Image (cartoon, rainbow, N blue to C red; front, side, top):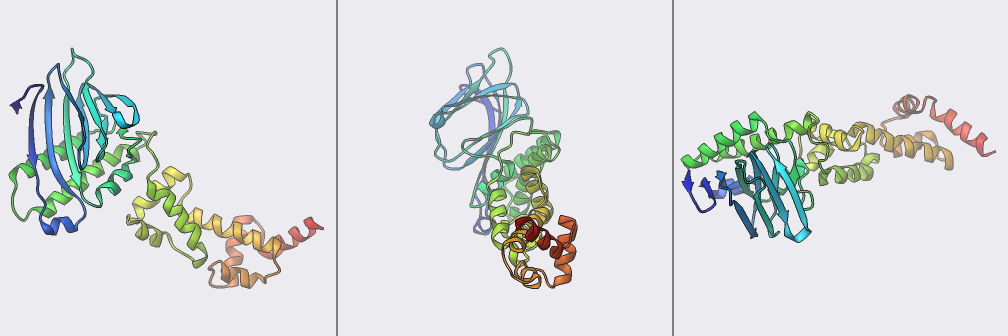
Length: 289
């Protein structure tokens, strides 16, 4: 590490090839430091996204645009978003502070951050760092330092592994204050629009640009219901409405809701409501008098 006015630090810079830019995300700079007692950065703006991990010690993080002052400690993370005004400084003068940072850019960068629940107004995660993250971070740092040509796939792989390691504590129930990613609500709206076309969970995940397993896990985590149950509930509640207030035939209702035939609809409705659709319609007719 080199000595500077308020820290000892080292960094490695990256410039993506045209091919790498097609993949949608790339590193800009990666670095690590050991702070001096007078450590303070900012106020400053940056033109990319920068993840900072507290490896040791305590730090005060401030977003001037939003009047945020947040105290962070070992294992926590903060993200600097483009064109916001940030400051951060050592919180305890009698303790050491060590940071690692990874700046990324590209059209998919924000998408990856949203998977973690990071937003401009929610720029921190607590207890997110693990030994696996430290290992991957050091591997990515060494890889970028080497600056080997034709190594773009390895770079991309290590960036994705870094985000995988960041997601693991959330998967295990670590940070319960994670903001709901934007794609979660958009996926719910997408299913609300297309459930009558018998849209599948695979198709919704593909539309969101996420693997089926990841989509199901995080949708369920944030919404409290699986995607398949979301679609089922939407179809069955609409079926109940149509049975109660219209004179459409049950076959017509079944086909309208995306079922292949009356038998499939009847079986699904009975499983959901406990009675066949014809019985439900009769009960609603009797209830209305």
